[in-house]
Amino acid sequence: MTATAVSLTMVSLKSLGLEKTPAATGIMTSAVVDDVLSLIGVAVLLPIILSGNTQNGNLVVDFEKLMNTFFDVLAFFGFVYLVGKFIVPHKKGIRYLFIVDRGNYAVLGVFILVFLFGDVAHILGFHPAIGAYFAGLILKAEYFEVGNQNRAKEIEKITNTMAFTVFGPVFFILLGGKIIFEPHILKEVIIPTLTLFVLVLVFQVLSAAFAAKYTGGYSSKDSWLIGFGMLGRAELAFIVLNITYVQNHLISQEEFYTLMFVTFLLNISVPLLLKWYKPIYESE
Image (tube, rainbow, N blue to C red; front, side, top):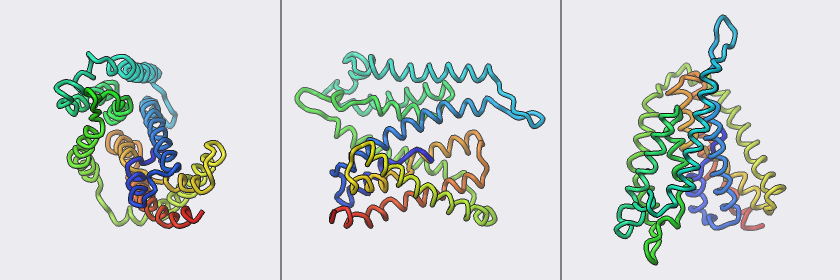
């Protein structure tokens, strides 16, 4: 439940005309850092969890597998650092595809980079989405400068369209196809779902708002807006659910239902709470 939504919150803020507020900048920055730390946590913890098994009621840890995992983590983040620091910025490297022929092959270059990172992550035992996410983080707008023109916004628009019309729907259809709604399970998860939803909502809003107020130096009205904006759980939450339930069966079907419904309720809460808080925010 740690990964927060970047896209969902920004769409909600834009619809209310709040995307240029100081709080919006704080939300976007915090959400990205939150997602990165969450993905690092998943990348490190998942193989550690899978290295253990139960024999005769006792936990047995495969230390060889654990050490291999440790070296895989070092190899992956070493790869990300080297490519992001030395290869992509070099004009004769992958960056060449961003600017050749006046940037007409830039989208191809972006997808080559994303799939390369996804493949490396997969080979080292991580989910491809973890690699793809880090590929996106190392890209900078300056890499798409062609002469006096910067095509970063144009490339971003094309890749977003591809994500929303091709890759996103395929991912969610595959994930949704794993869910079978059974009435008796729905009855069992109602109370846990509502309990977890209320707890996450309250403590997420309070922790984010207090952090913004007392460590970020934001005003009270911006701090509460940041608190409400950090509630969303979008694509990364579903990726983590896919890793834990569909791929590795680390959680039960009941736990999967609970987390899915809590994610859904939190996502509904974001636009509702932001819309409710907007008049209060503007009056202050």
